[in-house]
Length: 463
Image (tube, rainbow, N blue to C red; front, top):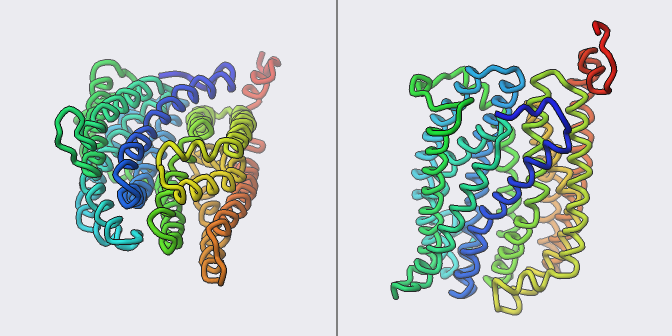
């Protein structure tokens, strides 16, 4: 366990964000490695894998329910120095992870074909997507255990073991992908099925490695079979915080589904270009996401300890850091977008769509970074409803205008990208307003006198 309620805020955020960014980068390489080898199978395969990848947003929504609730409650318990409650929350999180994994497998295999028929632009794209998703589903189910274990560590201020495991799983996936997809060394190529299988085997190895770490090395939160009996009260605590955060990711799935549905009329090569552009953009977001993810436990421990001035300081530092990162990434996309896309597809139209998407949508990078940071603050405080309100605003600012613009004569994809930029900008403004309101309601006037004095290096009234 690492105490985040003392010492430099900037130091804590950076020390957590750097390994988290590295781990998240390697985790994203799952998809980039798959895209690279699948890209050699043709545009239909690439578009199918990209469309099937939207199922990840559904699972991300559910894992966010689990992960955010676990991080928040454990970080608050650490701030209070309450080890018993932290251990109870951790074990109940594992029970919920098992239930969610089972539900994911049942519904995933039952609904895969219907889901891809809605998004795919042609029969070949749908077939590739269904095949990939059927082999990829075990990895999605295992994400719940991976998130429960990693979130428990993050709540205690520990992130390096998770990062190391993520790196190892990517190495496993990188080794398996060419063997299973292209048949390197075996002569038996599984195609898109091999891409899904490689990811599933790699995630399974990651879950096993983190479980071994907890069993042998973790001391603050531990496996306790006596705490595995379902505790409805603890589930309620996890879900009250986690469900709104899950809703936030569920709305992202809606936005992505709308975009794929609109783009389908332009053919599989356009869907392929958009899919590659989205994956590259998600990879570029990782440093800012890591800062936001580091913000949540730092805010959580200090909020649990009643050190509210440090909560504000964490938000200010994370906002400035995230903005600086996103400005640099925006410039990178303006100059290098075609080169970034070219490595994943040789089809000129797909390259053009992906590069145009990156160049235009990079104008919302700064706004996206602020949304991430605000979300991290909401999670740390333990009230994630404002993040959902912020995301839900895009139902009005993006979904409605996008469907309207797409119905007009002369509609082009560039119009969709500009609607997206405008909607994210409005979302960032709303998120900042909601953070200010949350601080007024929860922090103003509540800082203990002694804590304020200590923060500013002054003697307290009793000193």
